[in-house]
Amino acid sequence: MSAECATDRDALADLTAFQRDLLWALSHENAQKGTALKADLADYYGEEINHSRLYQNLDILVEHDLVTQKPRDGRTNEYSLTDAARHAIQARRVWQARGETA
Image (cartoon, rainbow, N blue to C red; front, top):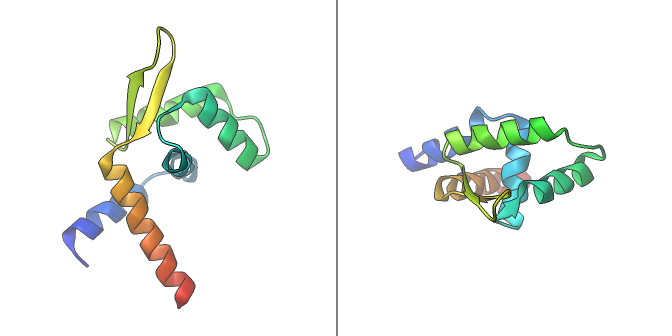
């Protein structure tokens, strides 16, 4: 396994399932407001997502350099994946595809 592949894998390995779901949601429609992510995850989980849970986990992903946060307007932030997150998600897709063909 290449060092880059291991690094990509490691980027997701220590995340919670909720944090990986946030990355997955961003991978489908990048540059989203927190409220849009909250709605996407509420649809997926079938229950309301706690506001503080969402933003605490987004902050963690920003600290891990997997998500960028930038102001959209005076009171709204926009979140998008970093290149590191895109590479990590792609590495996971490859790994999952290998398991499906086995």
